[in-house]
Amino acid sequence: LALRTFAFSIRQMLLFAAAFLALAGTHESRPSAIGRSRVLNQLQQEVLNQQLPGVQPSVTCLRGGSTGAKCDVILIGCGVPKRGMGWYHAKQLLDGDVSSAHLTTVIEPWFLGQGADSPPGKVFAEWATEMAAEHGTKFTSSLSDVKISGPTMALISGRTADNPRLLKQVIDLGCKAVYLEKPGAPTVAELEDMRAYANEKGVAVYMGYNKNVTPYVRKALEAAKAAPGSVTTYVHNNAYKEEELPECFERNAEGMLKNMAIHELALLATYWGVTVDNIETVIPDPEFSSCQTLTGPSGKEFTDFSKVGFTIETKDGKTISLKIDRCGSDAGGNSMAIVSKDGKEIFRAETPDEELQGVVTAQSQADPEMMPYFFLQHQDYITLKKLSTTHVLEGREGAPEGMATIDIAVDALKVAEYLTPLLQKALLK
Image 1 (cartoon, rainbow, N blue to C red):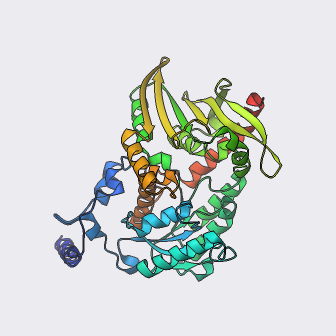
Image 2 (cartoon, rainbow, N blue to C red):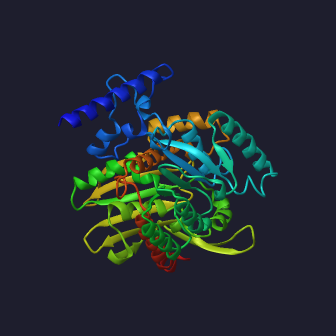
Image 3 (cartoon, rainbow, N blue to C red):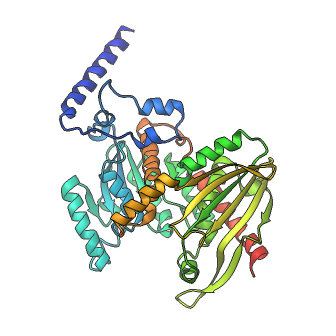
């Protein structure tokens, strides 16, 4: 007991010393993403929010090499500033929005390779030069230039087709965890192979399914739990115009269920236990749905849904409906979760709500070059990165509560591959 008390006292003295040295340059910080998130359970919340009395959270997250309080992150696949999802991940990390993470390296094969002399490549080079000077971040075109020391997570945000190769490379490099953007791989077989390799090496793989941690989903889950026998409907609207659908079908040739609707299928796998094996019935909604064959810009034909609605009944008695519409919004897109019982709606939650829509509108007007959905999902992305990097730092098994894993990704992709031909056969006109 005496030794334990002595060790605790030394730790407290060191923390106070570190806090004292850092306070001079510390600005007032806003509540962290984790603090605002409803995803974490109470135990995780207490662990993440531990801090010294009167000391701001950012002060207690000082980084001291590989043993400090931040997880190193390497980003593979950045893309063009203000357009690429990888770039926005990098921006949040470099801006200090994720207090548990430190971006050490950006690997961008195209714009630091063959695409360097293109107009977007020059825009990327200008940004990369500025960030390297300001933050000391390393920019390179190849993973072979990367050195790993200490807890490190690889964030892969490039082309889906490259993910199987990249995942194995970052694991072999020594990364403790991998964060993959959806859907993870082009096919179930490839994703299962990736999962087997990660499991063999003892590396956790998390998925960037941001809807898993959004307030509207969490609120609807609470409402459904309080109303046994209810039915939850997930609605997802994008803002394409009808004349834009041929290009959309070709650019997203994997199909709506593997692309736009994969977020909802991940929700079904995470929170409702939906897998191919436990689907009892699938009931298409022909009045809502539209399946078409359109000719893309290349001259090739593509068959896909402009909108699709269906209900899944599981073998364990759950009923969930989806309504996904590529042209369902004229204001940038929205998503809803609606809980009904005995045919009557008892709860509805939506994103963006009125407050968030006001913020998104103002930010979009202030920076029209930025992809609008970055503003819409800004907080979700922070939450996911903070959940995953904190989990790595703590050395915990499994995954943070609510965050999708590669197991969820496999189940969601299997359901997408199962549903696509079934629904096309029922709905193709």
